[in-house]
Length: 207
Image (cartoon, rainbow, N blue to C red; front, side):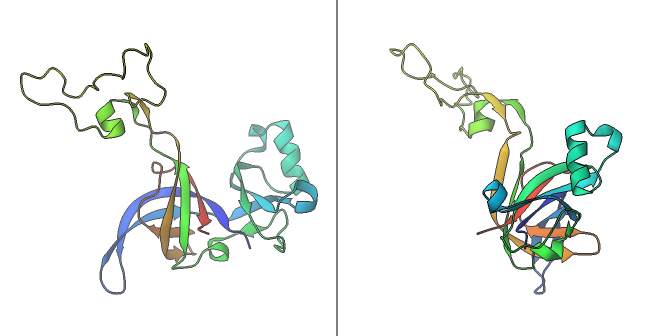
């Protein structure tokens, strides 16, 4: 049985559990993942499934991918990703992996995605510096202080300074599956997951 899927983050909301408590959840839409290729230990050195989502026009696919999809006898897909699977998984190219095949309510999962890009930010927002005095006598309010020792005549690698923030790969673990809507292919997990609304995410069972 496959142990992960590709999905798309739809946003956050809240639901009520059986005791009436509010549970903040992130809604992830996970359409059936189509198997494109099977990786085996004998041929590739490991067991995995290459899956894809979201059909695309044949005219938009280059020659190597056209041959790849043609060999699997599946329609061209926009996004491809490998997911782990045990050696005894009987799925072949063209099969679909659905939410109920991988996840169950109450399971703990981890979700990976690309965080929101924040652009060029200062040291306070980027690293959580508390800032300088706010009085009139101070000349440093939100700017970082000295870059380090002066005798080295250089800035040491790893010094926390202003710079680009966000737009990086991030994985959040320990998220609990609260609800699965098989009719609409929706997965609800408790808590927040990385990425902006509409971005792709990778959902896997936590080991």
